[in-house]
Image (cartoon, rainbow, N blue to C red; front, side, top):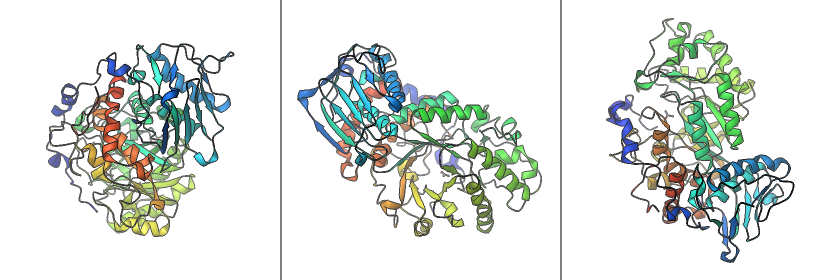
Length: 531
Ligand code: ACM
């Protein structure tokens, strides 16, 4: 396993509070959304992630007008309303959904897709008289809609009305993902992020067909999800964060709001309760969870590996079961992430003893375990998933896992960690896994990168973002974009379409889109950004 520094601050070489505001001033977001470039027509060759098949038909451009309606019968109506919500602010058009009288030049969303498209695929046809999206499920329609918006000029992403024309290039796209699980992660434990900040990120990553949101809800610095049976976890354990500033937490109602919002973006939330390490916030909230019965003080630094639940106390398992029961009840998706990383204060023997009591609890409450790859030491059953976060291209634990039938979620830290600096000048982030420029994030193949892990054992990819240095949405955006779209493409696009020259030129067209939407991003010198 890769050596991770116990003191991340030492490696980071950063002044945590001081450096943080620099990103925004050095890299202003928001090009003027009324420039001609923004109004220029889009083409079919700038889509990210790259679709499986694109057949342009320059004779069949479509124009979205004040008369355009969305026809989305039955279960498609929700995706229709979502699309209307994207189109109305920037076009200023009414864009009715399922009006009594169809308009002219309508956009039709239909659940009549060819079964070969699979559960997430779609076919998008742009012709001069109409646009049609076909899929077998609303997930597929939603994915098609993300492509559709990329075919409109960049100004479509603006929150305020922009001049048209709103022309879409004619042709047909047939598309489906290489991996069904494409995940982004947020860490509201190190710095708390409000519900609105999480929703903002959900909307931003959904544009790139990310369909899972992994929330790292607990760590040494804070416990961020209300647990009714153990109220001090949040009454006490959520009060601070890294740097000692006030923390915060999600009530169960807040959390459900996030889960529902994610679902409305066809995204499943995967909650992580990290254990047995990364538990100082719990240990400081309840003295009885400590082996010596003494609660440590809250922790506001960024070291790792010093805390552990008390493996030999019965109350530990009462606690863990209560937490798993409540979290499982709030979780519509199949996975519950149990952390398991960096348990440096737990012996291997204790670690395995702990996990072998916890894994059946996950199952008892109807969930499948997901955990950082170290928990492979406990030989979890075949439906468990190991999330690889090492800085090399493999680990013996993965090979044993594959032999047991476990799947692997690929998030190699030196490729996918969005909290790593881009280069030595990046004002935010850490560097223990190295600098990650856009080409590094893009430069690996999830199906063949991990030694001894065949593509059929790869569940998908994730782009984690730990937030020791990240406090605001602007910070999140500066670190995630444009590396998140790079990882999203690795998760979605066919292997044969993965090509850096192609990606960087397609990504270049996304600068004006990101800017028009009012979000920040890093203007990497590797990308020939369009203005
Ligand atoms: C991790 O970065 N400790 C999973």
